[in-house]
Amino acid sequence: MSGIYSGTAPRRKISSRVLGVLVRMAALFCGLTIVTIVGYILLKGIPSINAGMFAWTYTSENTSMVPALINTLLAVLLTLAIAVPLGIMAAIFLVEYTARGNTFVRVVRIAAQTLTGIPSIVYGLFGMLFFVTFLRWGLSLLSGCMTLSIMVLPTIMRTTEEALLAVDDSYREGSFGLGAGRLRTVFSVVLPSAMAGILGGVILSIGRIIGESAALIFTAGTIAQVPLDVFGSARTMAVHMYVTSSEGMHLDAAYATAVILLVLALLVNGLASFVAQKMAQNNK
Image (cartoon, rainbow, N blue to C red; front, side, top):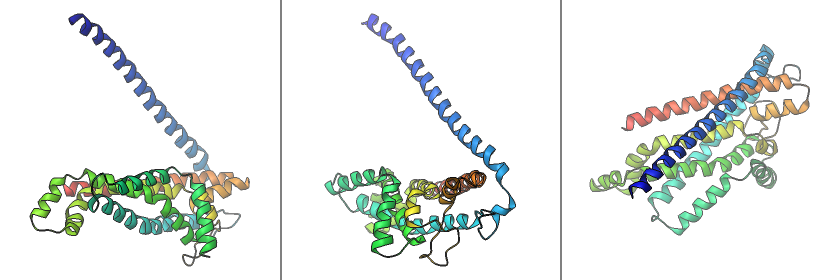
């Protein structure tokens, strides 16, 4: 027996070392890939940034990105205003108001996972057929945000569900023992404890909203101006970058837009992460 164990120990050490080397190589490869992409964007985009790109009105000469930047922020706010309440309420129902292991819950989870993997162009075609054509909203900010809401809803719902499941049942039992009802327990005890995980899903959704272009081309349009209402066409930063690059005449503007888009994504995600950390610290 001692001979068997003495023979397997060196094998385990060798396999551990090999796996350690492979993990380090994978991490190095991922890091180099990110640095290469970000460095290439910065090197090509920073020299192309000029004052004309920050003009309030877009023209073919200045290729201003200010209207697209404002439209992107509006799209983020409107999409989250639609998707976050729906996703959180759906997750609360699945976790708090249904039995664990329920068949309906499993079906909803499979459907949410399936919707997460659908290409964005499919969402764009659906949004064009339903919101733009059937509801006659036209190419508008509302059509685009409704389509984006459907895209990010599964992510928000699944992350919220996992965050709620991670809350220990002793919190619920203690609240019930003090006489609180289920609804008050959810909103006063469970949700504050799961808020960090919920904000994690919101952060992922913000990143997808900012970087989405395919679905918005079919639903929100490509007009480079700030709409007067939600039924006006709106071009976001990602769509602006696609349009300027596809024209072939404003590649410098496309690279500059990529730099601003990268900075915007970092700022929004950083702010959301900071808020999530603060809320997690306050709940401890």
